[in-house]
Length: 268
Image 1: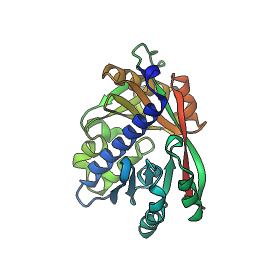
Image 2: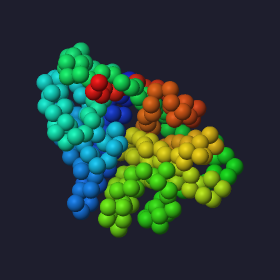
Image 3: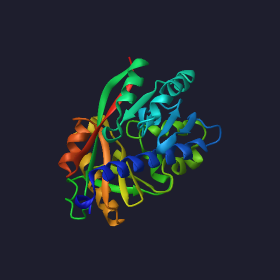
Image 4: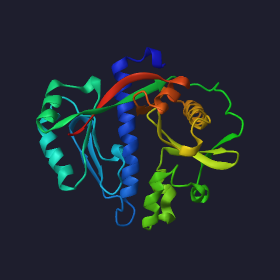
């Protein structure tokens, strides 16, 4: 199915799925009493959106995504919006959406392309290798296993310390999202999230205990996410990683290929 789909349509569907996943999780977090993450969501024309979580220093939660030609007229206002909240803004530029006027508007305000993030895709697959010896992958349903997760592999859980432990699973894993835990020799070692919507599977938020990297944990998680998304009937699976990072290389080893590389623009 993926090979028959026009490349631009693949780009659009993958970007739309990423945006939908992030918005869903931020809205769930915003519903927590007191909005402890400081969540604000500002819709823009054409499906673009400006996201802010000024109490959570997660770049993807504080980014403008889906920018297209015509949005250059809003860059200054958006930069001021983030500045007033004391949040460093990040503008994500997808090549297929890029227009020279966007880059010119960002440059005039002192923004530059400070990073690159690869978006990778693969076709559905069920015949994936078994996890390495000692690794077990489980899907977390409910809150029981969440208490086991150390901060090193579940940084989003720090918000739970602000009075929302009772419904932590609901905001961490809203509808459409599945949370996975990888154990190494029985101990929690890594997590990842799968989001499935509109026949697209999106692999997100992989986190590995730094002391346990290089043990095959992320590969095992990816294989499980791809298999479960495939069983759910998706047309393709997508995900992102910093360009040429270890996560990027692991995703390619798991059979994913680069669809595009987006530019990440931040202030000088």
